[in-house]
Image 1 (tube, rainbow, N blue to C red):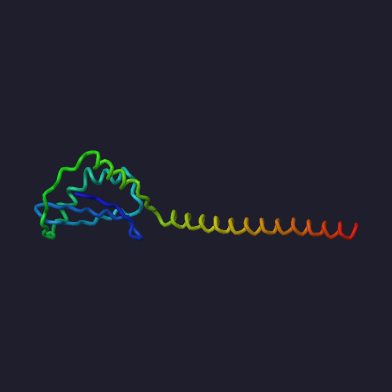
Image 2: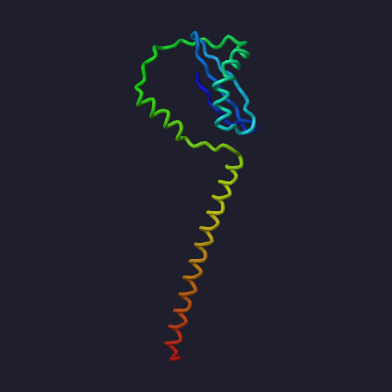
Length: 138
C-alpha cells in the first residue's frame, strides 16, 4: 500500500494505491487545505482501513505480479531518503514568493551592472578631461 499526497491546484489529495489478490486498486482522499503531519498520521493510523472498506466498490485492475525480490534494507533506506529529498513546493503562495524573489534578483543584477558601467564611464571621462587639461597646459 502506498499513500502519495499531492496538490491539485485547489486541494491536497491523498492517492492511495493498493495491490491485493493480484488486483491494483486506487483510492482518492481529499485532505482539503494543507494538512499537518499529525493529520496525515491520524488518517493513516485510524481512518485509512475504514476508508478503504467503505469505498471498495470497484473490483480493481487485474495485474500479473512478478516475484517480489527481497530488498536490501540499506537500499530501501537510500530510496526513502531520496524520495524525501525531492523538493516539492507545497503552496501557490510559496511559488509566487519564489518567482518574485527571482525577479528582484534579476532586476538587482541588471541595476548593479548599469551602475558599474556608469561609474567606469565617469572615471574614464575624468581621466580624459585631466589629460586634455595637461595637454593644454592648465
